[in-house]
Image (tube, rainbow, N blue to C red; front, side):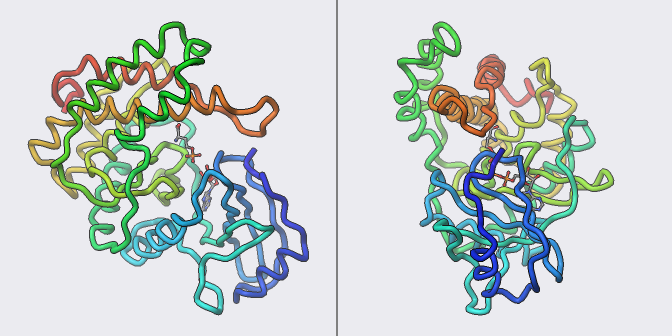
Length: 319
Ligand SMILES: Nc1ncnc2c1ncn2[C@@H]1O[C@H](COP(=O)(O)OP(=O)(O)O)[C@@H](O)[C@H]1O
Ligand SMILES: N[C@@H](CCOP(=O)(O)O)C(=O)O
């Protein structure tokens, strides 16, 4: 359940008075998501998506996220567009939280990933990378390799509660990732969290990319590595090379990878598995009992990590 902040009717009326989108008809909390409070807002003019940004989002990052959505949507990427009030601002305050209204995109995220989803995801990711290449704002990736050790330190003492010996196992991976992480691959704005619940499909066609709240500047191929983890493992945790081929093939139709990016994929994929393992591990150990959030399983990422550890080159992914 992701409605942390309730909005009173008079607060909503005052907020909407700043926009030109008609009168509110309903405002329903959306149960999915973990970070922010989200509402489906229906007005006399249409349906919109209202987000109140909660404590894990740094308000200083919001101009980057909202500006990026504006930038990408203007270049034809199927992502939400922030609505600007009469004063031109997209970001304002509601119920003491930073808040914004964005367009409501049609479609549903796929509950079961099929090979046919993977090609369009790769293509959309490459288009996003190209469309963002002239986005002027910058946001370093706080969850890249330099951020992993502090995250590990915050969970190390209790990591055994999730799996015996977990901290010891991760020590070797972390050292290898810190030692070998590439610095000179093509970089730019990446989505950084393009999991299946952040891609909408309508009638089998990709209709939306959402949730830009981890977007940042980092290696472009790292975004592919995130997707290899998010889209190419089966529920039994085996790697599906057909999905990987479709995903990377879809990407390369728009932006071919350099030899160096291809060679770096196993390490980048291992790093991406580490990144999601560490945030899930932290949440697993630190989410208070009774919190209205569904925690994600860190052990799933450990399976991904172990697999990538065994891969010597992109050939190992069937590429
Ligand atoms: N612009 C949008 N249009 C339609 N549905 C959306 C939009 N943004 C998010 N959603 C829906 O709301 C859910 C939660 O949004 P998300 O941004 O992932 O939340 P959080 O950042 O809190 O994790 C998504 O899984 C999706 O179903
Ligand atoms: N994709 C992350 C969790 C981030 O949640 P989101 O709802 O903001 O996409 C993971 O799988 O750990």
